[in-house]
Length: 362
Picture 1 (spheres, rainbow, N blue to C red):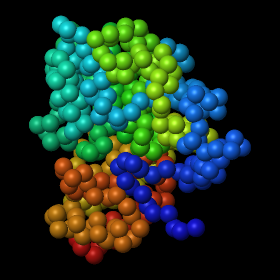
Picture 2 (spheres, rainbow, N blue to C red):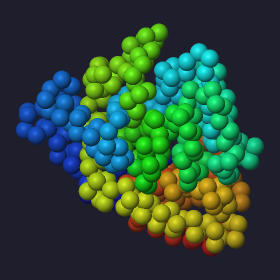
Picture 3 (cartoon, rainbow, N blue to C red):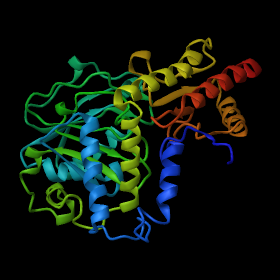
């Protein structure tokens, strides 16, 4: 077999080799039914079993025993930015947004399109370097919900606490951090995530919504835009992305069989520390984009002394079997996305490459 790349892509991102091999074994014919999963009906008993088990697995790994529904939806997390206020932002109420990066800012802008949206906290003036402290978050008591992005994929920051919102529903975009560390998911009224980082391939978006939020059906909305539609029909109202959901199932089983979310956090802390230690010991050659107390264990971002050196770093990294280390086009620099499936060996190799690169170019 060809040598696997050190895949630091931000999404679609790395998948565990054993998951890919498992899917490969079942690709042409699933469980002896004479067809691929790509071909079977989403109403078949085989797919309905996958659909139900995947929902149960996710709730189990999140530690949510009851009171929540798992929905499989299309359109990525970006579509959720609009779907959330369409469903929950009633006239006379405001949507409150904690703005900590590009994607939470986009969610806020979509909220303003639908209704009235306000900023509960923002760290934009500080160029996203550190996250707001809990005491700096000012929540309008007339809020329909509070929206936050728990891990900022582009900037490389991650919340270490869950804001207290009282009776106001808290909604978390966990696209790039879901299942990377244990958290009290019951503090969230809704969690959502595009699958293409920690949950599987692109093509499906997961939404986990508390039952009380689903109780009211917003009949002013088209049927497909109502969360209640998908909840009532167990995400089978229309044809779902069957194969993508199957891959999510395999990924959730992989997490469970590899020690669960607590073990994921242990591995992720160890992996990210390898790279952060090189940054911190480089004497400023590598300059982290985020203050240490706000750093993400998923997306490690940093700059070099010049854009010319950054381009050289990326070019040489590609020649050394690394993939996906260029920073987001909107900010530049370097970004290593070390999601759950990225192995320790990849981060170790990156750290060694960084030390060598500095010796030759520092």
